[in-house]
Image 1 (cartoon, rainbow, N blue to C red):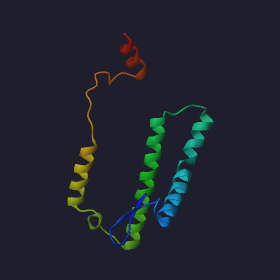
Image 2: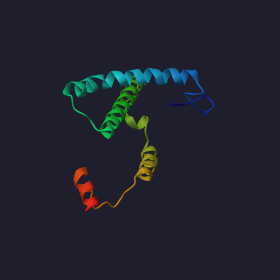
Image 3: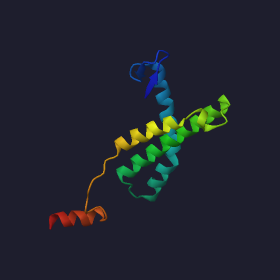
Image 4: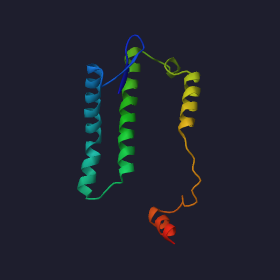
Amino acid sequence: MKLVDPSGKEVTSKENKEARQLETQLNKKIEKLLEPIMNKIKLAGGQVPQQQLMQLSSAAHQMLFNRMVYNLALKAGVEDISELVSDDDVDELQTSLSNQLQIVDNPEEGQNPEQAERDKKE
């Protein structure tokens, strides 16, 4: 986790005790959020692909952050989202998100992984 100090300098949780404590608190909330899902997976006796577990964890983080921002906005008396995020912010984030996208041309994309593996062997 990174925090920004009053002078605008970024500090990581490795360098900052407060950031480390916030990160620990956040991780506890994420674990609590994911606990029922993990129990359901264990009780079902099935396996969930690692990629799906990572997606669940990412979704849990995003949900928690969204709720935190919502609660902070309410406490601050924000009535309109444009007070927090401008159209310029959205444009900047669009560019950043687009830069992260990688498109691959994969003719085996529509196949399941087992079929794609068999096709490679043939």
